[in-house]
Length: 328
Image (tube, rainbow, N blue to C red; front, side, top):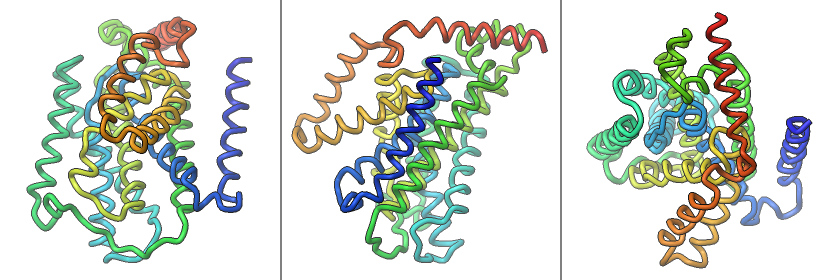
């Protein structure tokens, strides 16, 4: 019954957001831009949620995948497509996400096979720094410190970006939901709870961890591609900032990592908080954000959607995963 109510609420919210562009004057309001940022953040947060929330692998590389997606979009647009004028190119966005996923496989396989816990987190952070240095030192291919400007026509409305952002937010959430409800999701939760027990029961631990890491990279790459089509310019400072890793972590922690809707709730709250802080408290924004993190970790360590002890459901999911793997 609870799941049914949550599903109905989700359908209602999607319909409401889908109707927003048809409200007179909405496309020119700050709310429109705010919702676009929320959709980008939801996609990015879900990418981290799958890797860390459900698989238990704390990644600090989402900014790297976000940047790879943005840079791939700029390079493909300016070379393969010869700088064509367009809002979006679906093929370019898909290719950018796949490039990020490929990097996820390439870097994830050695890291996930050799490292775990804090060491894996530091390894992913190092990967992000390597990508940043490559882009800065890449010369004309990457534009160096200044980045790459994409050819574009001035757009009169944010509506196309809004629609694509909504599609990505909905699609990433639906993808995580489908994965979690599948045998793969049960295996991921089993790995998160106890890797040795999962392996002993027949779960291919490395394979599932790498797949989850690659899918997370794909979603982050899509978010980076979408954002690149919004700003039509990519740079190491704008796309390889650690904020693109810290934001999804904060959103998942706020809403509840390891839940389907936690990143969605967290994205709305944290985007609103950061936007308000940038306007009203620009000089102390980092201090305010840090204080908020401390408060959340002290009083809501499991997130808003887990305040009533939803951990038991998580443990049941892990047990089901082990049982499923064992039966196979």
